[in-house]
Length: 302
Image (cartoon, rainbow, N blue to C red; front, side):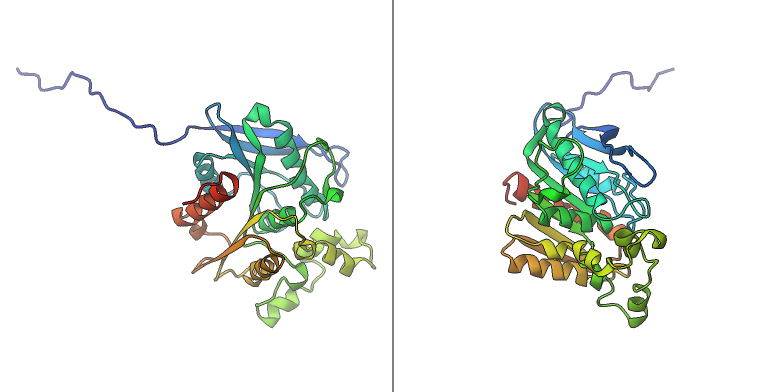
């Protein structure tokens, strides 16, 4: 009986058109104090190309309503950015009610300094680092950008390193906590006046531990829009026009203020997009982000 089974192996040519990516998980980048903790280890997950070339770095700052900081989020986008030729570090940071502003901003800057201090080990181009975040992480990303060179927010380890960034990406983040419900209904605006809102916990802490006279000043100090100066990186802002949690007005007023200050800022409004959701994982959105990073950190124009 004739055997029709094919016994010869087939050869195929595989073009090399995609970087291999390595995950380095749970790297401790800082150990600040926090409420009840003398040393509170903060960790990052690093995605990096598996070769010996140097690449720019992107610090990803997750959202979480000021009360959570899960570094596992945004994995599709982070992997795509790493495949685009970037080292992407997704970080934890201190959150309310265990910490209040400016502790989370100090954590972001500590992560940037850590990456610069370990740039040779991690193959990072230390001259080109960006921050990127969504929601509360977008707020912290913008805050990091507008406070380039402001030393009072540099605390902790690796203080010999700079925390400056060359680019900042703010995905549906806040810019003025005093106008957080701008553009929403009166009912929602009234809800945001509560002392129990996430932004109130973020700025002032739990009720029993607050300075009763410091509220307005603290809110003003916690608004990135109040820090805009001349030493600014390039900015990319994105917001969904169907966002029901953070008003699109928040990135709009930041964009307008940045342009007025002479900054390089680009803002996109994504039609039909809510606060998070499937729109933000789409290739067109990710391509906008990577193209922006290429222009800002690699001087590539597409």
